[in-house]
Structure formats: C-alpha cells, structure tokens
Length: 240
Image 1 (cartoon, helix red, strand yellow):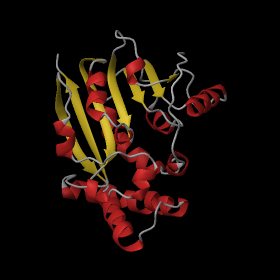
Image 2 (image 1 turned 180 degrees about the vertical axis):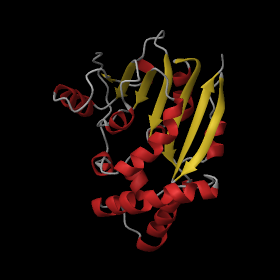
Image 3 (image 1 turned 60 degrees about the vertical axis):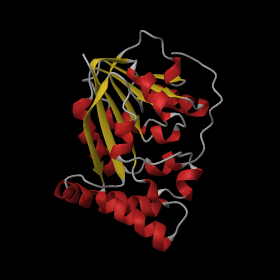
C-alpha cells in the first residue's frame, strides 16, 4: 500500500451519521452496480461505507483512495479486524497520485465530487485512468437551490444537476446514463430548508428518512421517470 503525505483533514461527522442510511446505500447501489467492472477505483473511500455496500467476490481488485490520514488508518484497522475485505487496497492520496499506467474498469465518486473545488480537472484525471469501454460514475447531491449551511459546513462546493454534469464530461468519454434519485427525500429537504430550518440532520431524522422515505422513493422515483430527486447520478463511458 502507498503511504503519501497529504494536507487534507476531514471537515465533519456526516459520514458517522449517514452510515446508518443502509436502505439508501442499497438503493443507489443497485442502480450503479451494472456499470462496475472487474477492477474498481473508489475515490474518497471515507470510513468504508461505499466499499461495504458494493464490494463482493465478483471484483478482481478494489482500490480506495482517501486523502484524510485518520480515515485511512481507520480503514486499515477495520481490515485488520475483518470488518472490511482484506482484498481491498486502501491508499492515502487522491487521483493525482496514481501511476500513469494504473487503469481501471470503473471509477466511482460517491458523494465526493462536490467536495472537490476543481471538479473539471478531477474528472479529466479520472478519465485518464479508465480502460477503454470503462465507466466513470458520480453520485452527488442535486440542485443548487437545496444548498444549505450544512452543505457549506461539510465542505460542499456545489450541488449538481444532470446538465451541470454533462457540461463537465471529460475528453474521450460520453454520457451513458443520467438520472435523479429520491424524489421523496427532495421534498423533505425543501421542507427542512424553507419551514423547519434545522442546520443539520439529526440521527433520528436520518433514520426516519432511511426507513420510511427511502422505501417510498423507490416506488415514486420510477413513476416520475427519475426526473428529479435529492441526488443525481451520472455515468460516462470511455471511448474504445
């Protein structure tokens, strides 16, 4: 495993709270899994929540990049305890620290790209590490009008729409699929912003959303044609 010094320090505790959103993770997991190939690069591995949802024996390799020193230590401790697969390679660093010849079938950014100031440059670098025919997958918070003080506090530079993500399509890639998820959660977010005005979600709110609203969203979203929602997913495919 690579050990690289980086100045990044994690800004908040939202990963600790949102790790309880198991239904939500399963929901978006089912939507992106068809685009995952044998070798996967996960940018922004955090505390391992995405890895737990997606990883299984079908993958030949799984590499997780994480720029926060403490989180990488936590990931490796979880591996040592058997809570995360030993097969995964967790590295301290970001996309710029990969060797030029490291190529992957799939590269994923799950609630990560909004934390990166230079998102255009980030996706260009990511595309350079995709194998021909490989997929680049982004899941991010949707719609800038939902941006709140909580977004700012946890280091979000922006929220996205399908159009905004199309505009930053990296060279050599084409949009394969784009859609929104969680129309019900979007309504709840609007109510919170305009009526309740609570600065950040409590654990109780997260559990209610995950246990009640997410199952409802799985029914409602197809009825809307995945035309709006609290989160947006974009999938690009590299030419060749």
